[in-house]
Length: 584
Image (cartoon, rainbow, N blue to C red; front, side):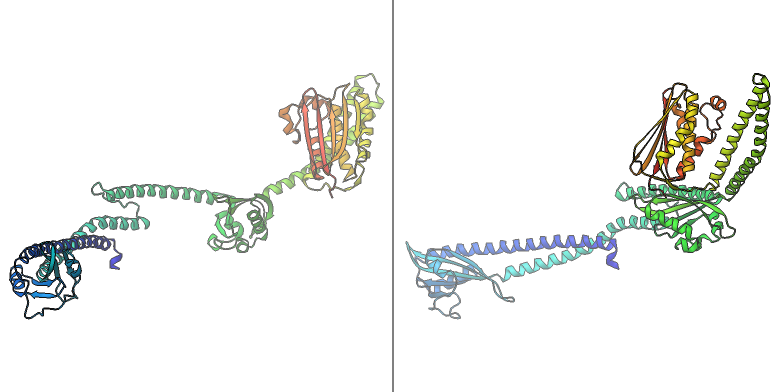
């Protein structure tokens, strides 16, 4: 544990660096001293060897000469003849003479070269330095002188120097260790403070601050830590505030809110959702939501959104306490990489809305039925009055106006009754295999007299061999009659109306094109809305209710078809119906 501390590691680093430096320096110094002393002794021996070579020409080679030079040189002197045998030795009589000298370099010396060498002795023995020089008489080599001296004094000097270096190194290491600890503390002390402060900040004490000392990197780190802590505190405060706002909003929401992860495990339930399902959020979070709330329908919807990645909307009965109808809107939640990370469901109670809708539909149905009887009576009396009054009198005109307005009210009542049935899903479809060409022809024949009276050309262009259509012929005929009736109302005399039919892309296409007054572009998206009329005054004159096109679109969509419109004011309007041929 001790060596895991930065302080110890820094101190040991200083110690190792200084130890390596002192070791390298001491080794170099000892080697230099050894080389210097050996070189001095070697040069001294060579000088004496040259002097001995000079005296060899004047003196007999023997023990006397060797003993005399041995006293001057402080070395062992051996004199060799030209055959390499020892003829003189400064250590005689202890050392024998007359035997060949078995040392390296003897042959080279007798050949005229000067030789020197250091003999490395085994550990515990003295080192020896050898110098050999030839003895000449004129140009002839008459022998050689071989000088040997011990390097014990040099080794003793080096030992003393080595001991001094070791002692000095030990003192230097001790001082370095102390200095290293001091320097390490100047680094580790601020680091320890920063670590302790970080621990406190991690524990929630965001007011913790450090005091930067100096201008070095540690002071900059302390200043950066203070800035980071301030920013972190501000961010945490902001997040806490937003979380409180979100919690307040979720608690005040009347709609239920449910969030799950990608495995459909519960992440969040607001109080409204807890009340809907009759469970607490802590009992759901982290558990599979469909099983935790016992709502299979919602669970299937969530799983479908998680698998497909597309938002879905459905209505279902959910409440655990009292049955209620909820509109459930589920949307996927995606991670930054684009993968689905979960889903969020919003549950809105629409029970009151559905109840009011049912009451509205019931009211419309009742009113429509109640109005039929008086309207029938009014029309009957108006017709009777018109038949009994003179043709040219104003009273006859009043009776005819009553009859026309009664018819308009009757159409309005019929349209309201049809819409109420459609909204209540009580309008049934009875699909049968139908010949579309025959159906279109019947509609044209029914409205041809009216078109002739209005001076309008009514015709059709039906492709031969049209496939049979599976549909409710009465409803499709109602759609065509309604569209043709509108075309006749808004086409001036001299205009034309054409009905085309063809099959393409497994659909039956029916086009109704007129040359009437047209529809302004801003009104086109609204013409299928209920009670919407482009020209209110003109429509009222012609007896329009604003419900016809809404009924047309509902009937076409009931056959899983579509209806589109294109129009240019002053040029005419075209409605195109597309019905699937394979619809069942």
